[in-house]
Length: 156
Image (cartoon, rainbow, N blue to C red; front, top):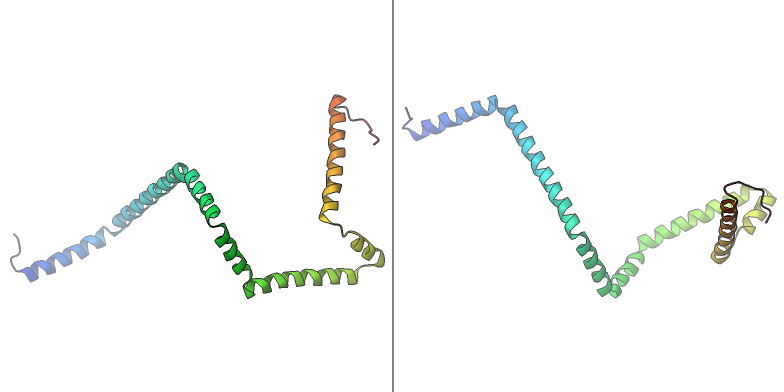
């Protein structure tokens, strides 16, 4: 039989709900967790599908944007690199490197110092030496393959 007094009905409903939630709390929490997981899975699936469908377009758009705003982006980068913190950071790393090198030279023997000083080469020289090494390696590989895999002593 329904309660006619609204205040009594509201109080009864409140008590009933409190009791029901207390009894079914674990079940409800499990349902909520499951629903959240389902939503997350759907969201991940949607994002993955979106990525596959739109990735090329997005990359093309980014490239076009960079092309259009090349000057503006270069100016921003220059400004960013001119910040006092960035300059200080670069100086600090350079300074640390120089200090480490000085310490190494100070503790090294005289003959090691000569080697360290002699090792200073330009990038062009390093590339040239690397190319020469690669060329001799490729010649050696070719000779080995021509001999049918037999490794012979090769004098160059």
